[in-house]
Each structure stands twice: as C-alpha cells, then as structure tokens.
Length: 197
Image: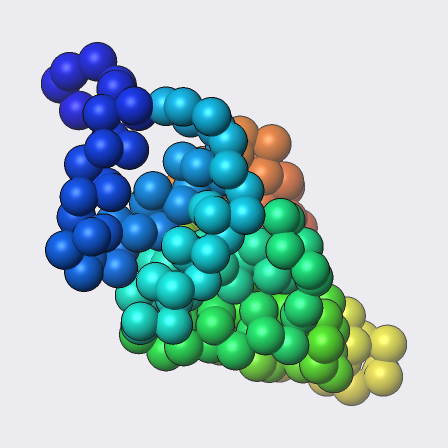
C-alpha cells in the first residue's frame, strides 16, 4: 500500500520471516510459489510451506491449505482433511474458512448436507467481515420458506423477516453488483409476501 508491488522482494522477506519461525510468512511465501508471482513457480514447495504453517496453527494458512485440499489445487483433493483444517480456522473466526465451511455443509462435500450448519458458519463468516455471506443466509431462509409452503404449513413471519433482513444487507453490501441486484429483486418479493400475511 502506498508503493509499487514488489513480489520478488516479498518472497525474500517472507522467506526470512519463515526461517525465524513465523508460520503466516511461510504460507504467504508458499502462495507466491504456487502462483509464480515474484519468481518461478514451485507448487510442490508452496503447498508444503502452507501445509506446515497450517499444522503449526496459523489460521490463515489453515484456510489456504484447507481451500487447496477442498478443490485439489496442486495437492490431491481431500474434502475430509479440508473440512478439518477449515473447521480449525473457522472456530477461531477466520472469515474465509467459515465461509468455505458453510459451503461444504450446504453442498454435502464429504458430509451429509446440513443447511442449518451451513447457515451457522455463514453467520460466523458474516460477523467476521464477509458481506457476501448475507445473500447465502437469505437464500437459506428462503429455502425454509419454500419448504414450509410445499408442506402446506403456515409460513412463519419470523422466517420471512429473517430472509428480508439478510437480503437487505446483501442488496446493499454484497461486493458483486449482479448479486446485489438479485438480492434486491428477492427483497422486493419478500416485502410483498410479508405484506400479504
């Protein structure tokens, strides 16, 4: 910030800090090696640095390494191990780990689908600074509304209000303009629904 980016110099400094035992710097260097920024790519070494930093307990490294395991980037895909690392970081309120953990439970990646558990982790992610989690929380609440409607049960006003609140946040704060528009559209439908009750 405030100066030109120098990824080659960043590599040198991260390597020094890593040699002094700073786990976060080890994975930061690992990420540069994975992407080939600031010098030649070395995916094998990059993954190993992130794995060691994750094992050392750095929440950002646990998140990065868990993400790599989740999608199988430069390492064999292992959703169970990914979930383990992401859960460690999410329990310490690492926002990206909580967000990914929510997706794991939503999609049923290596676990049974559990929308309530997904929502629980998206709340953690949102509270920790992920504004894009609001839309997912709104969609989860909408899913409960649809389920009640399909079961011909009364639609609880509290769930309508919960969906409305999350969609209002998403319509205002989601970083993606298309998702903001989608949230605004859903919000207008919810307002009409609430008015009809």
